Length: 328
Image (tube, rainbow, N blue to C red; front, side):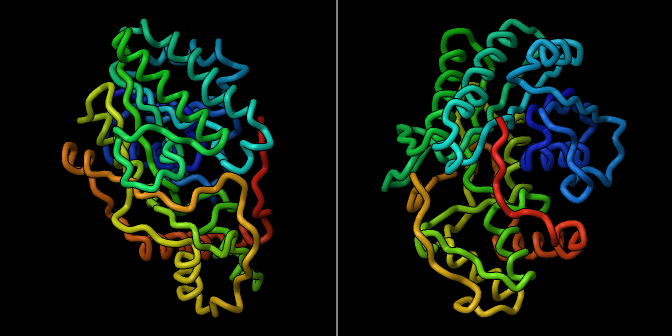
């Protein structure tokens, strides 16, 4: 089976490549706009590379080259992780989010719609499309995005569903919550909190850390992607979510306990971020019932997983910046 992974250099994309190299006889084409990450951020660095080829190409500016690579490789499955993906940054750079998340995707679908090799196109979307809806969120819930990022991901989902309904395009959509795990970007809450505590610095709790979040281990998300590719229907949306939600301050408290730090002495409250949702209750009944997926990594075990990674790579990570850097 040949699988093209767009955005393979993203956090989730890297983990999915690692899963494919681990579990099956897949031939993999990875495409991302940046050079491959250094070893400390690359989960598949320890594996043989004979079934994986990486191409540094930008969907926005190198589309002709992307098209040639796909047509030469002829993947049965295409998984799209490529996206601008930071809520807060989308307010400062909305046009970049629409260029990547919508315009580039439209160009890609228009090319792939007539390619006989394609059996599945799985779009990795986001539970952010639901916004701050104060009710249980199923796949039938109407999107109510609250940021340019959420709007751009909603538009991408609707475009794919339109192509499926009108042209039979084999689209599938996965809507995960916040992901975490080893090898994640260091500005994200779990690795950032661990590194700050190990440095002896304090953790800022935006809005007092009262926002409720669903945090799913990245390997559980990768398993969901593979499950949908193998057994999911086309034209279908699948939510994935962990068994339990937590307030941000509870997550930080778990990290403090793991590292033997006092929570009150290690945290300080600051104002909330623009457009942040206070909480979502996303239902993943459909994928559990229809496809048999369920999360396997608890938050406590996942935090330990991230701590172990940071301990192993501490000399490489200790001095790195913990801030998001926007790239067009």
